[in-house]
Length: 128
Image (tube, rainbow, N blue to C red; front, side, top):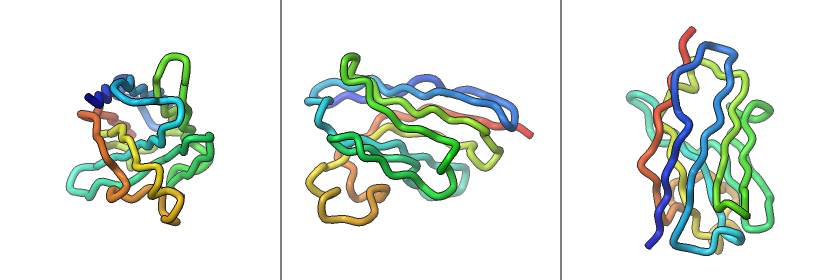
C-alpha cells in the first residue's frame, strides 16, 4: 500500500525559507519518480518540481533558482527546500508519486496526469 505523508509546512514572512518532507512507503523509493505539486486558493493544482529515478530534475519556471527537490534514498524521504518565499507561493503542497514510464514519453514532467499517488498535503503560508 503506497503511503505519502508530508510535513514541514507552516507560516513564514516574505523572503523566508521552509523545508518540506514527504515520508514514502509501500513501494521501491530508490528508483521511483516523485514530484511536488501545489494548489493555491481558487487555483488549479500545479506542478512545482519533479525528480526521476536517476536524479534528473524539472522545475516550474516560477520556482527555478529558489526551490530544490531531493530524495534521501536511505530514509525514503522526498524533500523540497524552498528559499526566498513569496506570498504567491502560499498553497497547499502535495507530495506525489509519478508513473516513471510516462516521464520517458512526455515533455512535461509536472502534469497532474502523470501522478499515480498523492499525499494529503501540507499548508504553506507566506505573509508580506
